[in-house]
Length: 252
Ligand code: SAM
Image (cartoon, rainbow, N blue to C red; front, side):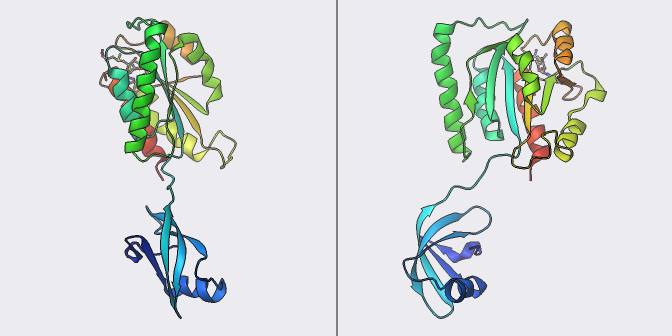
């Protein structure tokens, strides 16, 4: 049942009007029966009927049910391993924005040395950051954080996604992101299957950027080269700006 927000009080919820009529006369509910009540926005609860009168009823809240706060698009952020703790920032803020997976990777100009033994600890830390950010954002699921991948693996991933975007500051004005996103939203390439959310791979380069050779290879692998504007963004800014643009376009 949907009731207005003011009908929720402490651990109780009141039903009257059409809702009560349906519950009492149509469903012939009894005290002790359980119902699901929502205010249609933020609250949804499992409640047990404690009082049934002629044209109203009261129920005790048993459990708050989680609302779906997941976006309508699945975005994997592939970020060339940046220096220092920048990836932590991308994971934390990217989780708040709604990313579903983070894949760090090594490209031609990645300067960070990747040591698999030390990385196990870092990976654990990245995953903890994703979990805490997901909790704080009240997400329904924690984004996955994978161990760093090789460049080739990222290139081969393009075909697994409905859209693979390669952020490239030299892509030029005709490579704007918005028309591509609108096209994906309006003409889903996931076969109009509304049970499945469209998936996007967003690839961002390191501090030194991608080489021309890498950009060419990405194109051949099926990536769309996209610009995030005429300014040069820091690597961590580019990932978050790209994500924000995608979430804006798919917000419903
Ligand atoms: N030197 C700065 C730094 O230390 O972060 C900027 C590096 S920028 C070259 C890093 C990456 O961000 C690029 O490889 C690209 O993926 C993305 N990027 C930055 N500005 C962009 C823009 N205007 N359009 C598209 N991608 C951009």
